[in-house]
Image (cartoon, rainbow, N blue to C red):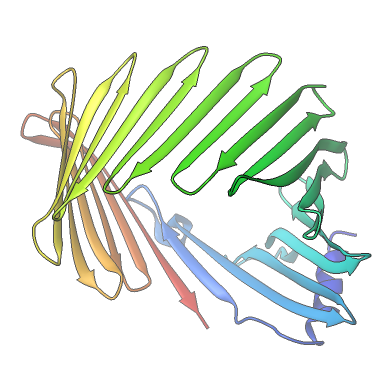
Length: 305
């Protein structure tokens, strides 16, 4: 039955902690007719425990007026955590009511052995991927090895990562591709190199007295970004690439984690993001010379009851 999981969640909710519902209302594309242009979403979650078993559960539903109650839930989710023989075991499920698919993931972590195992599956298709991560301490640094096997495609890859604080190296290898990422910090300067058989990229960052420099170089493009903090509230960041294309980002802090960010790309676009308390508004417009066209506006507000 469609609502069996909802019924279970309702029973469990009486046990312990229940979060207040969170309502998110979005307006997209800048034009709508009445309430049809609104997309209100209600999210509710709760938690419970029985012995050493912890449960989390919840539901995401549309808040549109309707006489079809069965159409309200969009997602139903839940997870369980416990300890078995020194292993921290967790299992979670997320059911998409519109598509009917249920994603399942199960993981087990043994902190003493620095070993973890994860299985991702679907209720209909069975096991999708299996992965494991083993950690080792080597000369003051940490080495992790993560093999992954896809049951559906029969593909396998392995990720080997090493980190000693200032330098990190990550190698990803499979039958079809190999990639290496090297990062190194030198005080105010950091360097990142990414290389694969198809592409190579170098990113160099440097900070000094309120000014940040970032250089990105690859076979296809090179660009430089300079971020200058004008004062406590204003930061300006121009970017130029090898073709001479320029974009400028201006960020103004409005206090209390609120901000206004405007990005201008000449002869291309203007983007504005305004965060004010629980409101987030985005404005995007095409730009041709001094002509503004194709304006798109979206706004979102989170309401916690």
